[in-house]
Image 1 (spheres, rainbow, N blue to C red):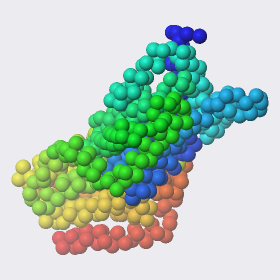
Image 2 (cartoon, rainbow, N blue to C red):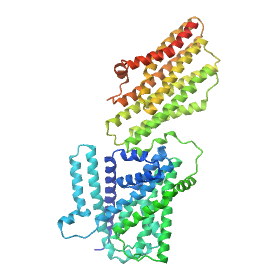
Image 3 (cartoon, rainbow, N blue to C red):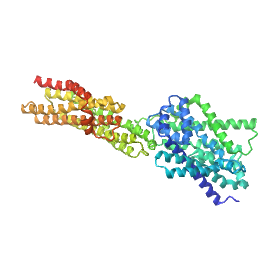
Image 4 (cartoon, rainbow, N blue to C red):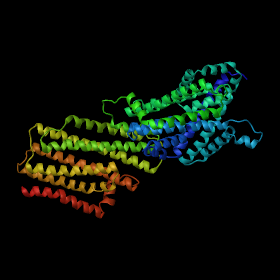
Length: 594
């Protein structure tokens, strides 16, 4: 049988099945493991050895060093992992990726003559495994069961694709041109370029090695031709990390460079070492045909050896990557934590969005002080910083909201509740910023007009600002740390702020009646009091969302919660009395002095 167009079509189709099977199996394994892999990878990077082990295990599970490296680039870009921590994971990922080639070597072997034994061979068993996977998929009712079905079908299709590729390239064994082609590729530089080019195009070293293993069944590929190609494949797989880092932070790009330098320097050292030995001592197997097992073993040997060699020099890799991507003068965007790479892993995506919302809380708190402090100090606030903060709050509300609505595969009730809490809190923090902006603008107008409050009005306003500042501090702290005990103190103080608002309105109307204040100052006073009370209201909402999330509330109903589950507790009454004594007493003292 000649190698014709049909053989080429079969080869491409087999490769498509191979990649599809590998991807399906990897995603099924990743989903079946839930968020545990990513969360463990995030936490277990304290030293290079644990990072290496985790990188190896995660890559073995998801069957892709590129996916692991992309995940690491995302962690570094989001600030979860440092550049130094990422090195160990990358080293481990390079070892983990060799498991695919080791699995594929199992598909070889001739028939044994026994039907039972032949059925147990992976390339034959694959059809049964796919059948089992399809049956599970048809009867599955739960997402987790469908993930198991994906693992079965993906594993089977992987071997079917490999078998199709082997059958498609079988006629090449009789073509002298094919043998001549690989004799030319025995040139080490050309071999490395071919391996790197093919892998860069299909963006998978596992798939590239699988193609080489399929071609090796023709018997026309020697060790001298295969070794440079395998080294090139390790370089070519870096393209995925490079593409992933485009548009990321400088440390994300440095992480991609670490991956590249590890494979490039390792390949150069291996190439020089192997050819030095070949031209001095010589390898007896150099011109022998290589099989699938030989390809898998050399792939594993290369990555293991390079990892052992580089392990003591991880610091040098970091320095080299840092020198390649110099520091930028521009400040990095806080919303870079919203990693698109995490959208398929809800737990990570939600955690990152939560951190960004916490940043919004801190920014809103800073703007509150920028707006209120000049009321009592006389000096104007830094207008540029204030408007930068306000622009961030407006942009963050849009981008975080968009990010939350594009998270994939949110299946658990807890994650859906967390998203609902975050969408509510997101809006409330932005509104706090808006009311702070109202105060900022009114204070600015007040100062430019040369107006001033009476001493009693100033003292009352100062007291209310102190109370709202404390509400805001507790709200942000409770949200940042998901501290329920802190969040519980917000509502009693918010009640006191409501009372203060009514008292301050009444007392200021009395001052207007006594001509102690002008109508112009009175309007500014009442507007600022209103804005302070609204800030306190939104703080109350956020605090209650925090409490409800921790307590597992089925839905977020702040009014029902306050009325039924919170205000009737002894703790609420105790805190209410405490804050009444702390703040309302000061208001009473001002009134007594008049």
